[in-house]
Image 1 (cartoon, rainbow, N blue to C red):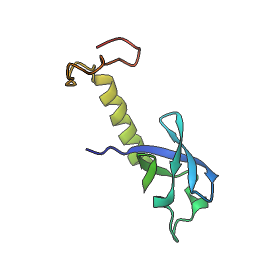
Image 2: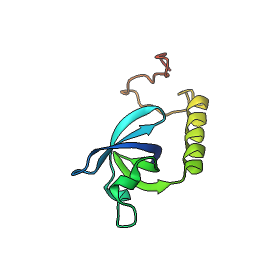
Image 3: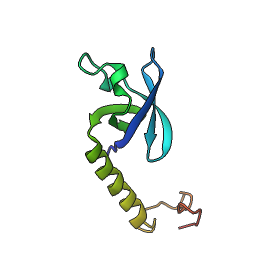
Image 4: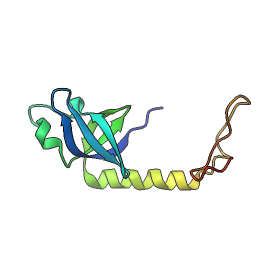
Length: 103
């Protein structure tokens, strides 16, 4: 299963490598923008736009409403999942809650 997370492009940090700094839920990450740049959407037009990010690549542009709905859903999933529902084999380390409590 693949998961793409929405983020908003804040700035272009390396024009040659097409790398930008992207805000993903309040966390800044470096992301490759190659997949969202073309003749119709040059590199400079990326700043301020929302994209879906998968393994360090911006895969496609999305509108802000869709991005916000997806972020809200991800937050809701994180809040409702307490860790006890996740399968774990005997050799795995214990699951940790966001507050560092063992599950």
